[in-house]
Image (cartoon, rainbow over all chains, first blue to last red; front, top):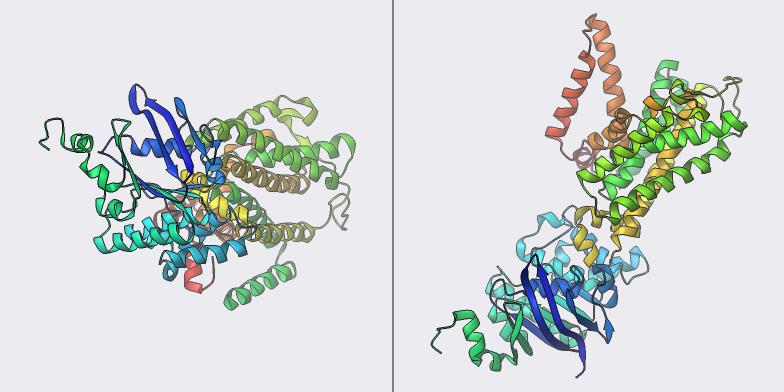
Length: 242
Length: 322
């Protein structure tokens, strides 16, 4: 498999706080990869660097062989990367359908075509019944799915999911896992997720990268990673008895 | 939907036959009402749709009025040539202000302050431009007011009423079309959450500039109208912040971001203001400022109890779309 996303020696500091230090990894085309790590490890900063919210201090990001570091978020989206936000950002005063139409308009020529595409996406995520409701009326779990629906409507090659499982009940979590599997398998969407819910990570990810204090400290298959002493150390501390 | 068509048709029919039913006082009130409705609708594009709080929209009225008025006074060129000039000047200034603000991340109240600043220093500048009459004002010559002269935009009161009615109807149609288009979706997304809009591939800078241009251009048209309606222009009046506030009130009271709310809001405000004047006169009780106080209390009550404006809850009750 070839690398769809290549991150090399990425670094970003905020007023002296080193959020990401020399991070390098690849995401293979067609894969599902997960980034895990303790709170404050730099996962969301890494996502924001890829998505163009922040420009890196140094290092490069290549997507489909093209450099994308330093692009604006809308340009990164246009390049084929969709993302969700850890703190959901729905367009509250708009209907669920209108939220997704905004995303679909990136690829569709007009509103009518975008509406059809948006309905398809809502159907896929099990939100079709709520299409006409204002986004403000949704529950947190539905807001998470709306985030995914909106990002998906832009038809990304790579989908960045920032803790979409957090706060969901196990059954909701499993349902969403199935949705992502389907997207990956039948629509060929490559997925990179940040996740704390290990139930979802273990069920979904082909590859896992572990981020600690802004650096990738371990990489591998789920089975390899959970046995890696460095990983246990970063979660449990230096003196952990393994 | 059917209900909306019937209601709309009834309202339109009433508006069309109104000059035959009304006294000349009522007709001038109705013209003022439509002028306010149109202008607040134009402002609604930038704030109600795109969420950018401009508190200096008197700037575009003034620029439109002075562009077309100046052309007429100095060169005898009528409003039909002045209109595109007015629109062009206002759009250009709107885009410049938007560029400065959006390029450097000025938003929210700081953006509002910037728009006030531009309106204010333009007012002061016009006080010192002799070519447009300075603080003493600019006066447009009027040859007659009895027969309709389309070329010079002159005619009896009903002529101005119908001109404003056509503009308001046109703006309503344009706003409906814009809201249902790509621009409408993108503007609302930007209004609701700019970061999320950008993550969905929207070039927020460009679409916010478009909102500024459309709103400024539409507002300039009412400036041209007011120049040829009042036939006198004073910088301290036309560029004043009071005028900017008056522009936004209709939308705030009627319902920002809706299509019909601004028109309803302008109607409520005009009728309210006249009703207070009439009531106070009938009571023979008029200490200075009493009208403003009553007006202010009513506005406060509306904003407190109907924070989204009068139209959204009314539309729900009537069973029509917003």
